[in-house]
Image (cartoon, rainbow, N blue to C red; front, side, top):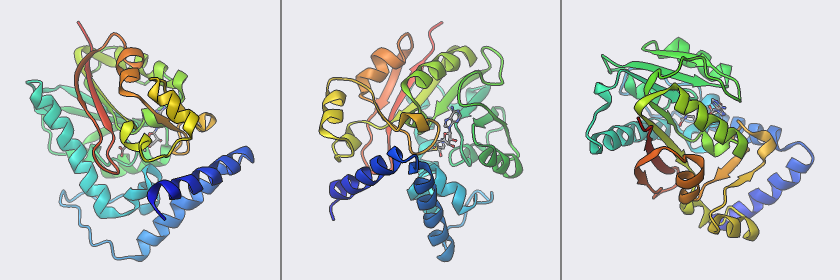
Length: 275
Ligand SMILES: C[S@@+](CC[C@H](N)C(=O)[O-])C[C@H]1O[C@@H](n2cnc3c(N)ncnc32)[C@H](O)[C@@H]1O
């Protein structure tokens, strides 16, 4: 079956189970099945950084592809490289920053790649206490905290030079997204960077959405599926880039935009908080 056809079947199944309030257990069962499958195979992936690998059930929860250990490590490294590259292109480097926050850090897929930063305070937070428990026990260079689905964060005003949220706004309702952009601005210093990733044209063109949802996206509207499951992988938001720039991040200066080019990648928007 081609990918769009597979998506059609998945979508129908999710729509049906969601009506019965069963979609979340179905998604969780799918993630656990992927984790079990991956645990049966010798994963062959050694973490070159010497840090432990999170268990497959946590990896599968942040995205089905991450059940495979090698993909988890590879994709985390390439996202950390992307953060470094985008900052470098703007004339700075992550080493020059005093404090950074990985908002919605999950089990540290990207966070782990900052282990060797010497002069930078590295923080991570997430709503999932099991993810944060794993990070606290295994990524000792980072200070991690659990936060609630809605703001506030447990940090003072102007605490960070960079806040990044990779594949987090993709799982929030529209109201929560706006509330979290406001909260991100609060904890960022003047001139601080905000980086968020979103699902855009690359995924919409793969027919994950219905015709009317695709039409709304084409009109520049945000499309959010299964909104009442905000904060979980079931809830998925599709952002036209112009919606991010003109509505969600209004008042922030756009520094860079990279459109997703491959499965697993997302559109990445880098903003700066004006002085
Ligand atoms: C798809 S995972 C991505 C994890 C990590 N950012 C990465 O790229 O590997 C989404 C993460 O966002 C977290 N999350 C969802 N809503 C959140 C919120 N309001 N505040 C903090 N974390 C949240 C979830 O618990 C989950 O760990």
